[in-house]
Length: 328
Ligand code: CS2
Ligand code: MN
Image 1 (cartoon, rainbow, N blue to C red):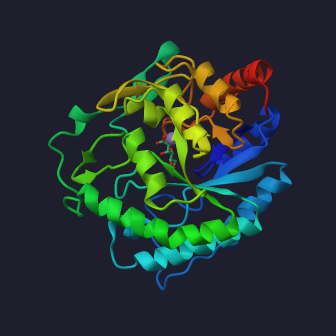
Image 2: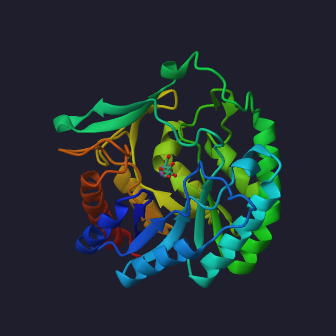
Image 3: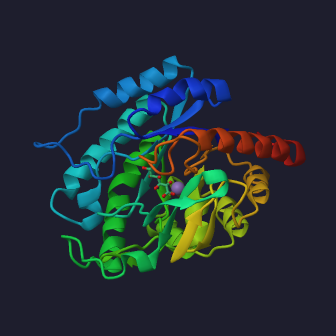
């Protein structure tokens, strides 16, 4: 497994020296945030993305995954302009191929994306974690897009995969869909369809391809009620895990909070051993972390100190798994 850190938000560049000190030489980077749309006149200027990649390489850190590809909102909703988004996405695959970045993590949560109704739940020692409680949003109004039924999202996802998988195959880029987070059936009228392991399995069968797989986000899949180690085995046996998010929660889809990596409801060592048992050669990153001493809660889940703890913990589990199971 290849341990990586995520660099999604402004100011994350300061993580680069920290990664060098932590001995983490892989990166997960984004092209843009979920809310972005294509510029007037369409197309996409990849110059800043290419220079971002170059700056990581010069620091001895290899970008391995794009998480947060070019805009897909109109594609997810099936709105006019989706074919332009798909054309730009295929161009991204071409650029990634030229940069030897072989995995793209995307999600199918239009409008709202990953969501937390609570940003600062008290955790040990005064740290805070994020959480979601469906009661918190009951009675909230529909969004400007009204009711978006699940069938519409499934149809648009199939359209997208049929359009982009040929390019993914020719460029050797693995498409790793991320489960919905939180994994509830809808938020403010927008359905959420990737809320179970069965739904993730359905994605991989929508358009059969060895490049059609998943991001195994342990927190999202666990919140959905799955037996996380069993789900790892099931998807790993089918060679469908292209990227892993190593985090944990306590609770259920309708009411959960995130935890320090060793303090959740999942046997994290068992999960790590399974990645090695199946010989996965993909990136794994800490995903969300608690906000710790003296930190701002400006990007809940993505502050710095929690990454130090998470990386140290993960390195320990990875070393133990390698010695117990073998592999790399
Ligand atoms: C996260 C992602 O929800 C999750 O489990 O992995 O949603 C991730 O935080 C975002 O994609 C970052 O932009
Ligand atoms: Mn995740």
